[in-house]
Image 1 (spheres, helix red, strand yellow):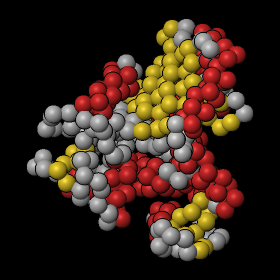
Image 2 (image 1 turned 45 degrees about the horizontal axis):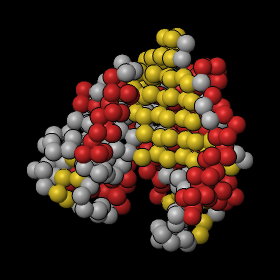
Image 3 (image 1 turned 30 degrees about the vertical axis):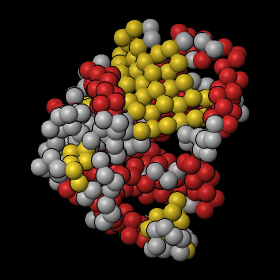
Image 4 (image 1 turned 45 degrees about the vertical axis):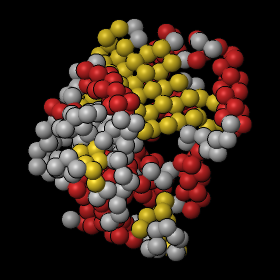
Length: 348
């Protein structure tokens, strides 16, 4: 178990925080996942993914997700030891069957091949099917941008969102992440759901007893509500931007499920205890050298200067990068309750 290395009062939250060295956190998460049936290799990848989210302040996709991973492993819904299989489909297309395993190992298998093909062809795509993606999506695309690629990825999930004008959930929260390389700077990266609020943020609000904003969800009777528990318990999320978010969710169903051979969100029927969506993921890499060439980096900086000049106070990813720097210096800030919960999972 991890010892409590440091603690201080830092609002918000109001409770004391325990600052855990990142490598210690990764090790603890690995041991938990192995304890419940993941192979050491798979556990290491999932642990790094969750720890990266925690390090960057993405609390809804960090250690908060570990009980969901454990629950799906315990009930046998996901195969924590699955070994993905990669097939060539075309010169610029890689197809990976995750074999009912987590999406991260499937992407890790394809990553180097995908990058090589994008360098050769200017563009390449990976289609991942029969996979469970339960983590932050920006973690998947940022490494590609650090290698100089424009990267786009999307996943569909469990039906939690009604289409615009509809009454029944059809779409998942259906996030997408986009990353752009910069010259001598960390990449521009955004990761956003198609729903008005991410399901993880909704669950986090419910756990903490907070209400959410108006216009984000409805209860089981279709009435607008700001109670996250009512949205979760038989209710549904709404798309962001009304018909615009609904259209984006539709696009992601096509790309992440229809194109890859994964299940559509409305086809996922979770058994008791399962929490991870068994769907699909699509990743596209573009080599900007084949398009904008040597001027691409300069043009991106021109765009950023215009954003700054237009009053933008923060670029996509900057808040996460600042939190990452703080975590590297001080450790990942966890509440004592979170740390106790993780240690309890390990000891049970």
